[in-house]
Length: 64
Image 1 (cartoon, rainbow, N blue to C red):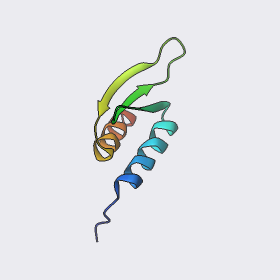
Image 2: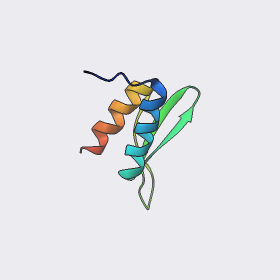
Image 3: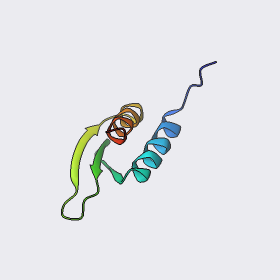
Image 4: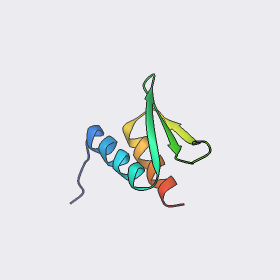
């Protein structure tokens, strides 16, 4: 049986994955912006407009 995750659950999971993989998420004007932490300068990884897209983006960046 496939479990359906609500947008809030996807958002929370994305934040946890980001935190565990040295990234962080900024919410601005209804969009989510993903950055990788770097001592010199934070690195922009991409932006998303929904919790589902954010989860996919963070998961993808974490696996590379």
